[in-house]
Length: 408
Image 1 (cartoon, rainbow, N blue to C red):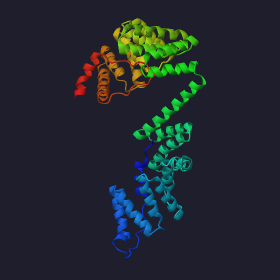
Image 2: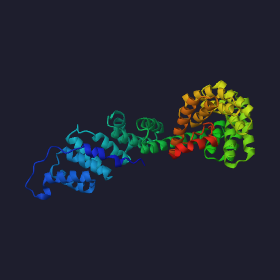
Image 3: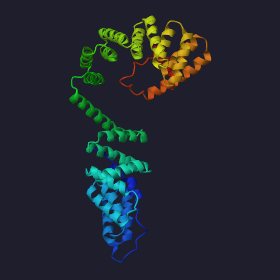
Image 4: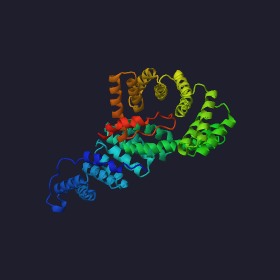
């Protein structure tokens, strides 16, 4: 359930009473001035039940004042009495059709009651036309709920995308839009299962889902089944290689690393343009000390994709290890331009500059590395996506060099 009722404070604040009401001689309990003042004070303090009692009494005394009904509507919404909120909005609108923001409050109340069809036009208007960010946000969140309740999943996804553009760092928006994306993906996969349960696409989806859940054995079975149906299907050997490599990181079983090598090699036979497969081959060979083969694979990836940042850093690492520091410098300078926050690239650039006698360049690269490394220690980089290649890693000497900067 999308919870937006707690955000109604802005509406309460913006719906104000009409000019001060004349006092009567009916006694303190019916003094409209006192009731209005007490109600507003209770509102400001967040004592909504007390404010409700005051404004309900005002509504009895002055049933023709639309602002009183509007304030009551916002209070009822805050108290989750949505049916009463709808009643008061309609009363206020009948008395004064131009009173601001009541359409949005009515839409939110109707949606909370599950009356999505009635709420939808007003929610769409509030989301697409409102100049107020909070009103637009609340209407957008309720639109997700309404579209989902009406089975209009594609519209829910479209709204979720718009919400993410408007409020990219809002936790509530991120949570609810994430649920929309997940639900839509699930529905699409269910449809794929119903329409083509034994298809290559279904098997590939199963393999990828199992891979993301680290169910490596099931992923291997699914991807191999794809290859039984289509032995030359591009990308499948690469996915298998990733699965074996991931399992190797967990188990340290050398057989998994060998299997990953075989699968990445097989992928390049099927699809020579798969730069990721070439990169992963190069990375495994570099870690195994087979530097000549590693350099060939990194170079192969870069021949097809010159801006492949990880491959640039990988090939530079091979050059540094084989005492070809001058060759590493342009690779690393290119890498740092492509991705200025890559601490591995800056560290290796500092080492290449040192080896070639460029003290000024070394100092600059080292300072940048230490700054990035310190920031990464304070706020670790977010996990890479499931399709990202294995990142280059810092060596032990880099960590030792950065330690003083981190401590300071």
